[in-house]
Amino acid sequence: MKLLIRFFLLCCVLLTVVSCEVHLEDDTRILVEGNIIDQNNLPVSNAKISVQTRRSSYSEGENQYVLGEGYSNSDGAFSVISLYDGDEDFAIEIDGGDKYSTYVYKTNTINYTPTDLTFNLETVSLKKTATFNYNMVKTSGESNTLRYSFKYVEGFCLEYYEGTTLNEYQSLCYQERVIGQLLNDNNPDNEWSFRLPLGEVIEFTYSINDEPEITELITINQDSYDFTFTY
Image 1 (cartoon, rainbow, N blue to C red):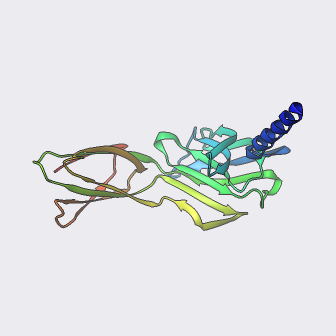
Image 2 (tube, one colour):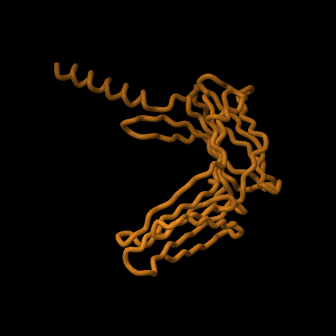
Image 3 (cartoon, rainbow, N blue to C red):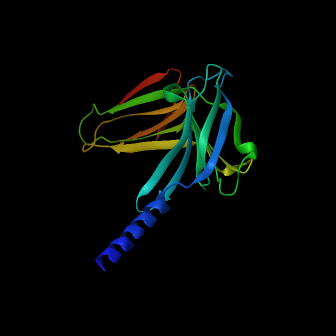
């Protein structure tokens, strides 16, 4: 009887583990190919290409599985042979490193299998990026407050495809983002940084002691841009 119970429990554990794993297509490999350029049509070399699939779970969070990896050559071209998974959350990520933006191709491979098992991304354009380092410092007396925000364009592009058709509603490509904070005696200073495409303009809006807002434009023309604001 004890042996039967142990066998039953073991089967339950195995079924739970297998149901959470990626189910790879048997004896199936895919080819991911394309070419990477920057905004000046120059080749981007040594960009990392990752073929990924994910399984989401509300209880355990999101698990990401890498099925294949490779890098672009000196001409910006890449050709990666990868395992293949039929999944509603299949992605190919192109990471340009610290100097370039990130691109993600996403699709549902349960309903779509590419011709000749080849994902040809053709030409992928990455943008050169910069780091914006800001430091908000309180130098005045007590009871003064600063409310501020930065509006900028993220250095990230995700394109979602249904088959061979781009779904613009599920795509997120170089979206605007706004971050901000209220500083006061309890939290007088703040230092942070974020990345954005080089050459973009940041919209900096602030208000001291709830006075009318003031907006300044900051053009990011350096790879590392330092900004300090005192109030």
